[in-house]
Image (cartoon, rainbow, N blue to C red; front, side, top):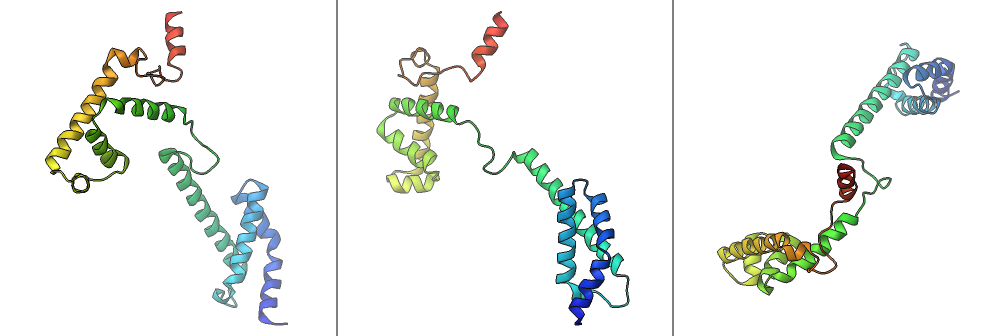
Length: 190
């Protein structure tokens, strides 16, 4: 019998105790089984680190404890991250209707701008270029780019504030109350 087989046999004698300890560390049976498997896998892959003549059971329990602590810390970190940054992954997708409405409103508003102002907005806001790169591409001084961007923003703000935009003159992209806002207003009135 080789040393690897002997080591596996020694570990197998401690499996019932490992299983019980895994259940105390992880309350759910599936998580306890995973922890037990992770512990055995790690012990076998690092068998060269075990010193013969020392307490194998204590060594296995230490491995299991360290794995459980690492997993708990990772889960806590992921929960904090999800609370701070919001959930990640394909399981949740936010509603995008408001983005489409805002985009259509912005397109309608851009019609009040000159073609030069639209080009500046295109480079600065859509392509996310800096003043220097925008000036180089358009062939105008940076000061001109800054003033045109400022004017374009102000003209769009003025267009949003104008009664014509609110009355639907801007086309099908007129401002609507925020989602749920009409319900809130009806409850306040009633």
